[in-house]
Amino acid sequence: MLDRNAPVFVAGHRGLVGSAIIRRLEADGFTDLRTAGREALDLRDQSAVNSWFDAQRPTYVFLVAGTVGGIHANTSRPAEFLYDNLMIHATVVEAAHRVGVEKLLYLGSSCIYPRLAEQPITEEALLSGALEPTNEGYALAKIAGIKLCETYRQQYGDDFISAMPTNLYGPGDNFDMEGGHVLPALMRRFHEAKEAGDTAVGVWGTGNARREFLHVDDLADACLFLMDGYTGPGHVNVGTGVDLTIRELAETVRDLVHPGADLTFDASRPDGMPRKVLDVSKLAGLGWRAQTSLAEGLVTTYAWFVEAAGRGELRL
Ligand code: GFB
Image (cartoon, rainbow, N blue to C red; front, top):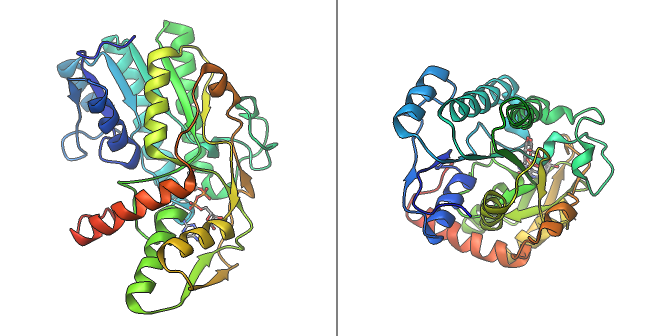
């Protein structure tokens, strides 16, 4: 059982995942949350990260920081996605080891799995085939992060664990229409079309790619669950086990945000991985299941978006 009064470092607290983990930790009675924004601490800088850990001495670490984005951001900035993430994962794992952190949870991504992995994707599919080219840099960095946790456990006995979430969405997401992920981008595009009185809304790719979407509050719940009760070298998939086509997603968002709008598909944009749905039986066997349906999650996320946009506080 985790000590609710021990210092906890959430690396990446301003992002979609980090902010959800902070909400969840606060709701769960954790009293000593430590964070550091980019301006205060460059997580790619080992000596700065070491100094920060020396001063803060966290007992638990959630390593959810990184350079992230959707398919376009990944393909247009592959060097940043590889370099930033490799460095951030390595510096934080090493610093956590140096000060004797009791438990660290590292967050990967479902894009670590081979492009043509058998679906639903089990944890064993890691490194069994070629990666999806549109996010190869990011995936390689994420795989290195998993291996860091495994090898620090193997060589030093550190209790560092890894969770692999599927595609995420929810409050605090990046609603940038070029750099963000499909769900927030479509939500904003339909919203702006409605405001402007337009009825034609563009969707990238063929619409045939299949994705699974997990609400970020469910992910935060799973992260706490794993921190509290899981230990071991193997990473754990976190998802719903349910997927849909991008066309179906676009139609669902359209029906919620701008009913009656027409979809146009731009097949000159890449689809990315043809299908990505996780086998979540390992986590289910441990006793955890996602609670939020996509229909429910879309309604609350859209309400959050409208409010945040009204206050001029969207992350773009
Ligand atoms: O969300 P997304 O960028 O992530 O794209 P990936 C998912 C699918 O939605 C692709 C289509 O088939 C896109 O072509 N799509 C349709 C759109 N319209 C849009 C749009 O307006 N914006 C975006 N972004 N997509 C990322 C990886 O892959 O997923 C990362 O690049 C990471 O490494 C992340 O793993 C979870 O699922 O394709």
